[in-house]
Every structure is written in structure tokens, then in C-alpha cells.
Amino acid sequence: MHRISLKPLSEQTLVITGGSSGIGLAIARHAARAGAQVVLVARDEDTLKSICHDIAIRHDGRSDYVVADVGEREQVRHVVETVVSRHGGFDTWVNDAGVGVYARLDELSDEDHARLFQTNYWGVVYGATEALKHLRQRGGALINIGSISGEVPAPILSAYTATKHAVKGFTNSLRLEMIHDRAPVSVTLINPSGIHTPFGQHARNYMNKASRVPPPVYHPDLVAEAVLHAATHPVRDITVGGAGGLMIWLTRLLPSLADRLFAAMYYKAALANEPPRGGKSALYSAGGEGEVLGDQNSYVRHYSLYTHHQRSRALKAGCLAVAVGLVAMAAVKGAPRARAYLNHF
View 1 (cartoon, one colour):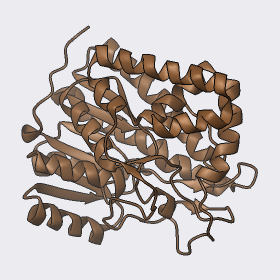
View 2: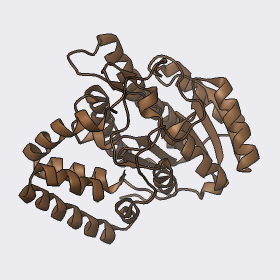
View 3: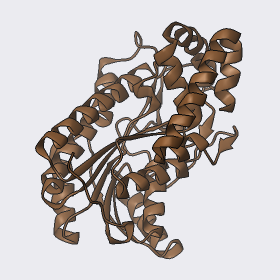
View 4: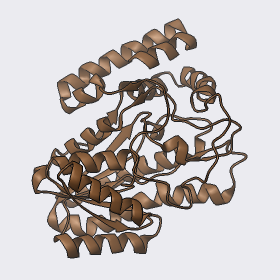
């Protein structure tokens, strides 16, 4: 297999879609602190201006922005052309932009369902295919932000889950094409578990309770660290959060148990015991306002041994063995105990 060489962060220009809040903003701040030139892409210019000012003042970093809706190919193409014109090119492209809808599938409108795919799936397709026109010549990293939802089914977030299944299939197939062509591009899929971002606040909500990120939740910095590792070390995929890793393996090894557990769990985990929030969602208009964290009060995990050890093949195998053992224990103890194991791995 051909070797792919990636530059140190201090020598890179990174383009990050969905950079106005949550994971995208966390990535931008970490990259800027590491000395990278960061280019943020989102729909709200005022927010992007404010973020770039903050990165310069508080983090002594270099940043720029381009306003675009990633669900429109021509706008994404404009981002590529603008970054090449202003900065001479880019070394890493991160497809992070995403939106959510909390709804039963039989109640979700076709319009909202299509818009969800336009951003979450087609935004990745447009970002990847337009960025590759440059990366194939220059070399670098293409990083797509997927989700454990790409492998783990979920009621209420069903349509969102479908988009992430699509992102996984697209990314893994695209990687094979790059390998076949011996292209100097590393293609990575990052699969976060529940992350403490404003996702629940920005999502459209059909339900009669407030939407939230299903706990346990991890700090966005963990995703940022995984992305920057992938920007400098060719890696196939990284799952962020041991709870998510365990859920994936539970789904693979004991699908019937996983179905019963998740069918009961998500209706409680994805909805808070309070009325829905007011205000508009980010489904059709800009939602990010420069906030990294959400408003949930649940315990936030700042470290994941499982994620950290994925950087080593031997340690990754050891963590996998632990995960399989926990899944087996969950099967013996039953679904109620299984949920407890998921919350503590």
C-alpha cells in the first residue's frame, strides 16, 4: 500500500465546515493553537467574524472564513476556490456541518427529511468531491465527521441516523477509490459518541419534550483531538467515547438485545423531562452562534481511554477485548444491567 505523508499542523491550512459552533469550533480553536491556518465555513457571517476575532485575540491564532451553505455544491466549490486564492491551497478538509431532527419517522415531513439529507449527507459529498480536486494534486487529509449513529440504530433520531449510515458508506467507499488510484489523500471517518454541544438546541423537534444529546456525553475537545490526530497521521477511522464503542459492538454482536435496549433507552435519553424549547432550529437557517458547549447539566466526560488507545493497534485490540467482555456480561445480566455498563465504560 502506498504511503501518505501529512504535514505538521503548524504547516497546514485546515478548512472546517460547520465551524460556527460545537465540534467544528472546538476543532478550529485547537488547530489554531497548534499553529495552523484555519478557515471556517458556515452560514452566518457575523458569527464567523466574531469567532475569527476571538481566535486571534484569545488564542493568538490565524483564522479566516468563507460564508456558505454546504448543501449547495456551487457554494462549496466557491469555498475551495476562495481558499486556494487566499491561502494558496489547503492540506486538510473537515466535513463537520450537520443538523438534527427529533421525530418519529411516520411523523417527519418529506421536506424536513430531505433537508436533513441535503446538509448531513450531500454536504459531505459536495465537500469531499470538491476538496479532492485540490487534495489529489497537493496531498493531504479528508476527514468526515460521522457518528456512532452510523452503526447504532436510534428511534426519535431515526432520520439523522440514516444520514450518518449514508456518510459511513460514502466515506468508506471513497477511501477504496483513493487507494485504488494511489492518491496522496488520507480519508478518515470520525465517529463521535454523544458530545456535549448545542446539537439538541439547534435541532428541529417534533416531540412533546425538550430535545437533548443522549447521555453519557463527552467534551467536544476529545473529537477535536481525534480530528487533529487524523490530520497528521493517516488513519482509517476513530470512535470517540468508550460508551459509543460499546454500543457499536453490542449492536454487532448481540443485535436483538441491542434493539430491546435502545428501543427503551432512547425515548428517555434523547428527551429531557421538560417542555420543548422555543425558537427556530438550524435546519433551514444558521444556528451556530459561537458556542462550543450545549446547555445540558449532565456529567461531561473529558477523557476517554478507549479513544486514546485507538492510536495504538495493540492498545486498540486490548480495548476491543474489554468491550467484548462487557457486551458478554451485559448479555448475561440482562438489559437493565447492560445500560449501567454502557454508562460507565
